[in-house]
Image (cartoon, rainbow, N blue to C red):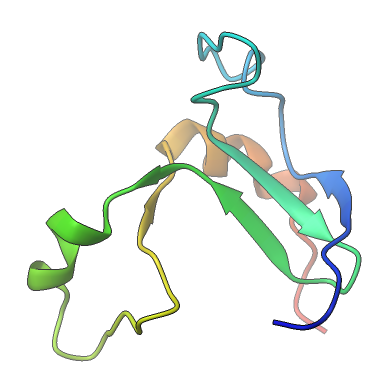
Length: 85
């Protein structure tokens, strides 16, 4: 990826508002919109444990990771996720 990454805005509540206990902004699942309109997910990397159980219609390439995002983080972010264009 050659384009610079610029975080535009948090999507949803802060980790603390989602009821998560975070020390020094570490181990805090989060969801962000990037300046180019894409999204960045901060969460637990579960690739090694999940890759073997992926459905046949899904895949995870060498440059990709499978991230666990707590349900409440995404549910509480729903209002901030833009509609499809």
